Image 1 (tube, rainbow, N blue to C red):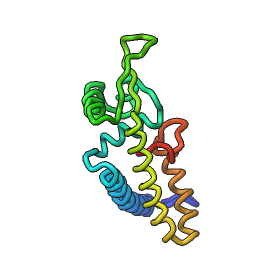
Image 2 (cartoon, rainbow, N blue to C red; image 1 turned 90 degrees about the vertical axis):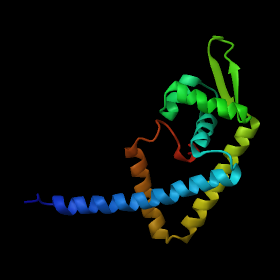
Image 3 (spheres, rainbow, N blue to C red; image 1 turned 90 degrees about the horizontal axis):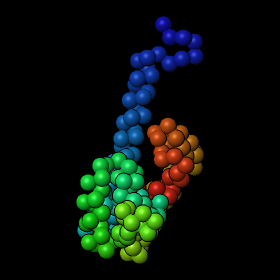
Image 4 (cartoon, rainbow, N blue to C red; image 1 turned 30 degrees about the horizontal axis):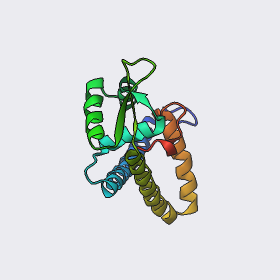
Length: 165
């Protein structure tokens, strides 16, 4: 027997499944939008490579281990990604003058340009969709997405609008 004011387990599971299905549908749209925005700006860049650029854009200069931590990959995977981006002229690798054993990574001007263009394209695509939504749906979506983002583990202290991913 359900407690007063609570949702029965069967109804609760069905409601959760309905939300999960809706979120999966939205994520399909968002991942597609993300992929298109990258390929429209730089056709040879993968989504994973763009994510690396976006992390560097967010933090400025990072050492390899911190970049790997932010990407949630091991350092050797991050190094291979950085090598490709350095060869493509999108990331620079400089010796840290303070330690000389550490390498500092940052975006080149081309890397910054690509991140800016991709993010502008994404914002344009999102605005196009949001403008089609009824105002009440927009408000409900804002509240739901803010809660989802907070509970989903958005990077500490981050502004999701600046994540670039």
